[in-house]
Image 1 (cartoon, rainbow, N blue to C red):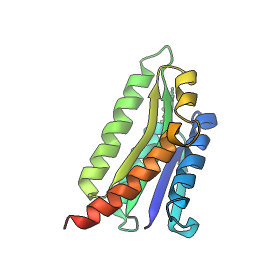
Image 2: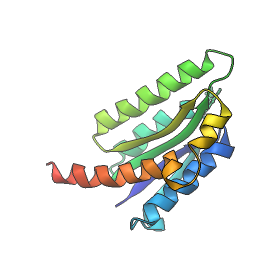
Image 3: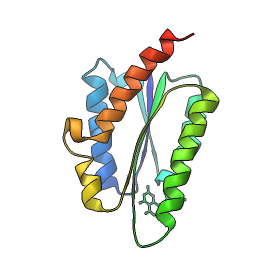
Image 4: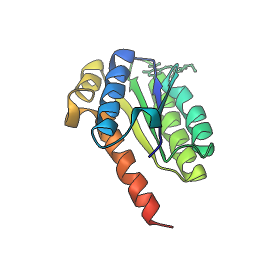
Length: 142
Ligand code: INI
């Protein structure tokens, strides 16, 4: 299986933990390092552009998107959270490959850290397992 991971650098103290755990999830289930491409983007808002390009490249069985959108005191959060989820869903339905949504949308840093903890508590790990399962399901349905 060939995977592409798109990870945003904004709130990287969270997103690097998601990435670490996503890689752990893939590798502990048979994924090989040379079949995993990792692309960094500045913030979650930039994820859909790369998700669309990579999904359309025909090079990947699945993509995994990782980011952390943390609510501040401004409406910025709502715009970014809405656009990143819509953009990823659009890329998935347009290019018809699985794209796992590992973008945290939380009210505060504590909630984000809780979701970027150890294995089963880590949304990166969960996104990796979702991607693997979806590749298998997707292959079964012609
Ligand atoms: N990007 C994030 O990934 N998470 C955030 O919490 C965030 N906040 O809060 O502003 C954020 N902003 C940057 C945004 O994703 C874009 O990179 C920026 O607007 C430039 O297009």
